[in-house]
Length: 306
Length: 327
Image 1 (cartoon, rainbow over the protein chains, first blue to last red):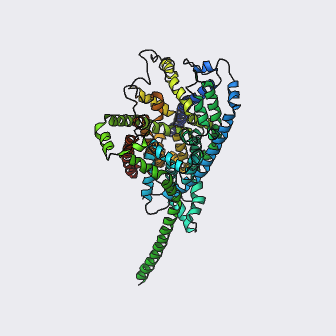
Image 2 (tube, one colour):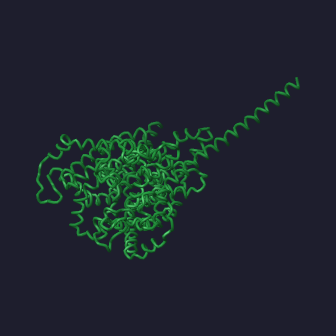
Image 3 (spheres, one colour):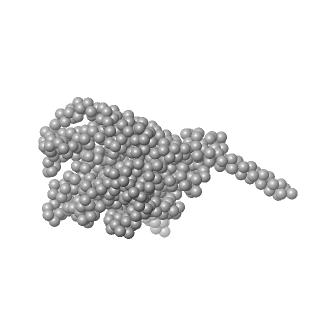
């Protein structure tokens, strides 16, 4: 009898140990499979996304003839560092660089502030006609901008804004960017309403609520929006090409596009186009690396405490 | 007696609360108008006139090179577009067909990559995130060369990689990405994937807003990865997914730059790349027929608006806002 009991206890213990062993190895195995899967997807993806940049960098170091070949190798036969020297010593490149920084900076400041305020009005405040105005704003996205290009040109002509930065910088100050307003609105609508109510009971007015409650909680989104704006402006080719009309005002994308001149004898100077493109992308990459810390830091919203 | 007093006092308190709420509502309305003013001003100054003008153009026989000869023709442009011009519906079908392939691909990849990049203990997280975003910064001119070379049937990297797996991708019977009508949308979707960085970033910003407690609680309850995705991530991300869906729809319907630079608007191969905006651009700028071009643009407006309104109406069933329902 006693022996039997002892045996049962042993068996029970054995089961417990076996189960524990099973569940931990199962967990570890699952975790290992998960990690292998995750990293292989990410590495494959990273190679895919790295490709255009590697291509640009490789081509920027080739000779003119080598860069124009169809049979493509990523690396140059002999790196031609003087391609970069040619670009940097071009006074037009430096001038266009400064123009680009100025325009992108102006657009960034004006648009981020106005877009935040407008998104707040669309998401957290109730007022008559809100849905109508919101639909109207979304409507401005749905008409292809090429369709309004001609009347818009006439408008800026009448305002005597051609050959200035105004057509590009000033609309930004009036929340020009329905996509960004919509994006911020979506983020602001995820914030629990109790937070504004609590602030309102404490006597805060909507401006204070925006500044002390909403902006801190949507900071990742606001920084993301700023980055989009900067990159979009930095890359923008069409509007500067149409409105600036004066070499002293040209921005970098125009500089790169002008190198793609089909009137010149072939082959196209792809090596210089790519060298300029690399110099063009680097500041954005740096900004991205710096800004990243801000939009990826987690915000823990413990609903009740706020 | 006491109950009556109680009722009285409650109704009094309620009335006071209501009054306060009424004041609050009025105040909110005023502040709302104040905050919306910049947009209204910008709309009146920079958008309204051009939009109304282009609607007006659609009623005119209006050639860009000879604006003084513009002639009012009523709804003739509209009639031609809707009933007499087979290109209208062909190009609309091309745009909608491409949308059906590219939009889901972009939505799914954008979300899955963001979730992977959001993993807590990921080694080299910043590096991965930068890499995934990097192609969106490549200037258009440089990008064109890269697309054409990469997709070249005999020398392109895509076919050379596929050939490594044993499949005969190069050569005469190979995969002619940009020349085969049945492959060309996949080639364009592939090109679009390089620009997915924006969607990934938006999703990453959205993932930051999900309280980590939810996942901890779910893990304690024994919910696996799939369950957590379905029950926490997707609902919590629904406002952001909704944004990507609506904006993706608007932008993809206006898909233009890639087919334009790759085919110069010829629609090659077999009209499969005559997207709606390519057709619009040809009419409005190549043929300088601005009146008819404006009519086409407004058709795009109406189609986009209808689909968007359906999406907004559907939002109440699947989009969850922490700040309560939108109304």
